[in-house]
Length: 376
Image (cartoon, rainbow, N blue to C red; front, side, top):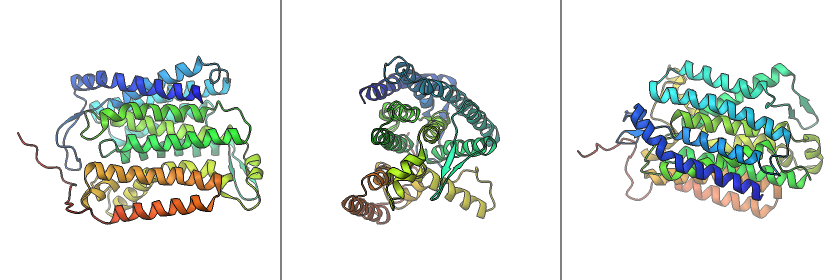
């Protein structure tokens, strides 16, 4: 655990210290988020937070490779190296988009390329557990499912990146939840606690925590596509690597006769962690398709826009979405691992409170979805 904590601190410190330099570089290159109709910010904000995040991930992986605990596992070093290469590719694609505003199809091609680097080098889904058997995936199916999942996660994080600090905090919460599950799982199954999924998850949490002070409302800089696509790729890689390093048959037998959820947490948890971003993607696809538009044509109907329209403040909307992310990810872990009725009752109580806070407009709230005109 101490080495994981060191990796987190290295990732956070590197990202925090380099964010200022990346901000100045973005201003020099003109990589700035202008004020558009669908945006909430009222003044141009520089991008390139993703560049600082990439540096944080690289520093974290480098330190991990030199540690006696994490560096002694060849599989972890191998997988982390190729995940970092894919992260470099996806971040470069994001940087080019932040500077030149590339088309959606070009970005999709870059996402598939980065996913291919991960998949070809062995980080991919190997099997799917069912109630009565384990389905082993053939190479073609494994590659197709993995590439699709990585591209889906990459775009999901990009979709939810609409308010200052929102995507950064949501991903940090999800990564910490996933790391917690990985660590508890290796301890309970008496397995080696140095895993690729654990390393990637703790590095994600670190870079998000390091970037959040620069990105909290009012943001000094944005992560841009270079950051949102990077985080999506890393989250997907962490969850995918879990399926290749654990024996689901042992997990199923250890979960007990009628206890189904613990055995399926490795597959359910990634969806829970990305529940809000994935829900936003599904709703956007449905909404835009029914309106006769392409799914990638932007609008101002995302979840965070709906909260602002209900009268929640910027910080209030972000805090509510943080609460839902924490509830879904850590609540599922608590229920699945403890199977304690008091834990279930606590999760339900918090969910009801969160639902009331979400639906009921705050006192004196007004529509904040349209940014006010900045005063000259």
